[in-house]
Length: 163
Image 1 (cartoon, helix red, strand yellow):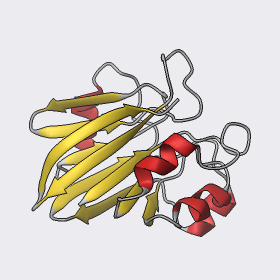
Image 2: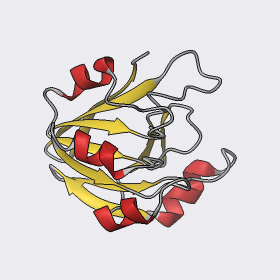
Image 3: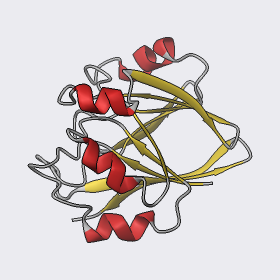
Image 4: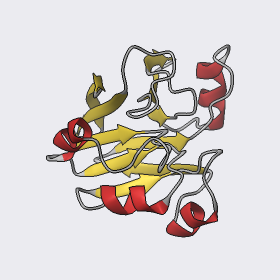
């Protein structure tokens, strides 16, 4: 299963429409995960043209995003892989342990908020922040994530530059 991971698109200020480099990566995915700060439902509707979308609420998301179906946290299974999502994982110090306590059964925890891409494993749990495709802040470029899930195993996780 091919999965695209986005976060912190910050529409309409930063995301006017899906950037071409992001759209190119969405062509063959089955699921899109958005880790919050969508800011407008239009982004989720646009993304749903490519694949099924699952999203969590970010600190800049309003009632329209909540009414769409985004919740504070999400726990789903993708091809047998247990995935949890949250927008703000808290401070970087102690993050892996904190996420492990919050989502003890998750194989993978996806989060956003910092706009800083991260892919690390701690105590058998993978934590993954795709960064932001549209608001790179102090990062060299905008980024997104791609996951390859096979029979309950995260076979590959990549963070891709898209700007």
